[in-house]
Length: 472
Image 1 (tube, rainbow, N blue to C red):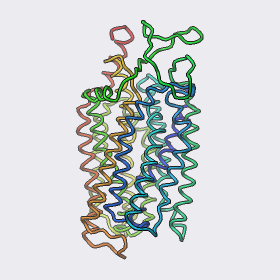
Image 2: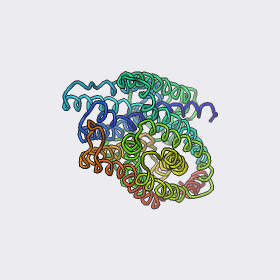
Image 3: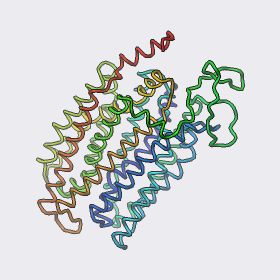
Image 4: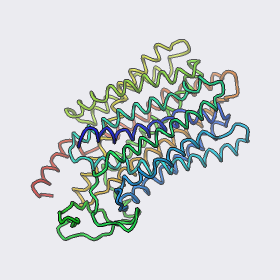
């Protein structure tokens, strides 16, 4: 696959990351400290939105696997879902300050449900393109690495919300200008990704009746289908399965291990990122510090991705990720509990160290899923990249849902009140706990689970060797 196509594909993740990270990083702070919503209600609203996001991801995976279109089974959703997704991001930031708490809560839930739906329509098919783009173990890591770098750049822009709005006397005006800019860029980047991956999908060549007609179960005896030009095209044996039948996939041990790792990892990263604006504002004394610290963290992460990618070619990915997360915890816990106002430089140094170690988490887990797709195909004769990535994103969203609910609950229990000029000691302790210790606990759980994952590079290569000689 040509480099420009890989970069074009990765640009889609850049746009997604801008909008997605802005929501994960700043939306709860927006609800509590700008809209002035009760912290538990804010956490509950995001929990509901993320819960729906987690539920509709596998549904979108099934729809994508069954779709037949002249625009591609997966590309079609990216192409036509890009603009609605951009608009849905803008809607999130239109919740007014001047209405009651429960009206704010209802609007927040509604906006999040719309955003989650359009997100799944675009991103599940987008993520599931990787196994189709390449069959090579190392090239997939390269594609994932390019996407991770561009995603990281997008995350930097997404994290500039606090710095962006600090330049406006009217915070709401600044937020809404940000939302329009980010929403437009997100839509454009996804359209570019769809155009850059044209032709990578193995499509049935018979002309569809419409844009979204289902794939039938008509197979030629030798596992091929005839194209219009008489050539044989590989049929990946994607049949018309029901949702219940798809749940059989969850009985596979390696699937459960990878999804369990993703779930607990998402709780950890979700708590870390969402707690950062509170930590910067109420512990370090300056909300803009969160943007600068985040930019350092993300920039260092991006620079380290090629190095972790190189390491992943030589060493076991599971062990590499274990080392990365353990070193991250060694930095994060002291940062959360020891740093205070006036320690900006030390905080920035810690953010750089966190970027070095957390870069492994940005790269390695995502490079494991395409291998699992191929493993399952070799084992069962069925290929379901969309449903695998649908479940992957489901468990990610469920983990984030739990993270926001936990964070909202902790802020409430520790007496956080955004209307106070300064927070009580109990609230500061809750913020430190949410930023330093809580993410560390869940990330350690995640990485311990991954150590039981069985699809290593040697196993994957053995499967390919057997397939080449017709043994599978």
